[in-house]
Amino acid sequence: LGLASARLGSTGAWQSGILYIFYTSSALLGATYIVKQTGSRNALFLGMLMYCFYVACFWVATLFPNDKEHEAQRVSAAYIGAAIGGIGAGFLWTAQGA
Image (cartoon, rainbow, N blue to C red; front, side, top):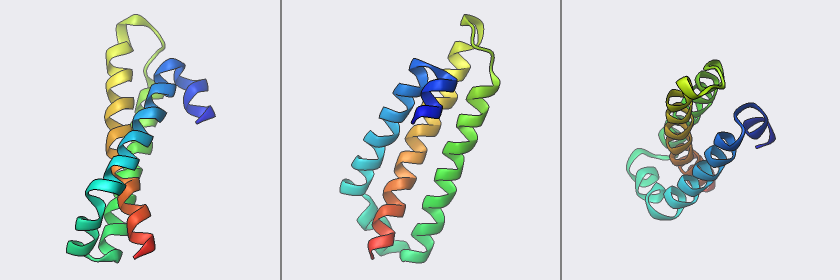
């Protein structure tokens, strides 16, 4: 969380919030169904892939310069990655307990 805020400023803080909102929502609302349908092992794999996508989007967001011209690209990469990573984290959390 500290790295996200340090590298992306307020965008990083929002990114962390989005990550946790999607993490909690997916863990409570949909991850149990996914784990039952795919099995624990496949759900862990899917969750890890989605979380890796989050890390990749964070890296992409840090590549853009911190100026108004590139703000939309930075914010889009950070927020989309956080949403997908949060869903993946919900899968990971649920599959680990299965």
